[in-house]
Length: 122
Image (tube, rainbow, N blue to C red; front, side, top):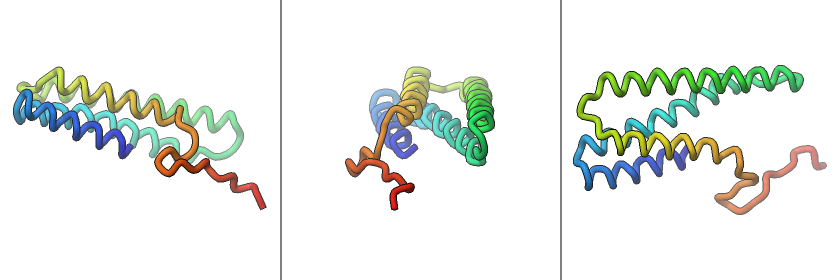
């Protein structure tokens, strides 16, 4: 999630140079929608315990909640923000969503180059 915020802010800085303050606000809004989607997923899936069937069911429910929140927020943004810079908004949103998907593909702690420790070792 930190990477999403960093990249969204970076894109917003570029957007303010290219398109002014509405570009900045549009990029931050687009990136924020992706971050809020990840937060919803985390909140819904944090209680995932039990057998594999219930864990998968909770993960699917969390993904559905994330998608619903993202769709509603996208709709609200397009309806409410009439001076939106669409390219900045959609660019930041797309990058934010792609970064959240890439988080599942990364193994280990890439920031410190240390593998994830196995807690079952004694």
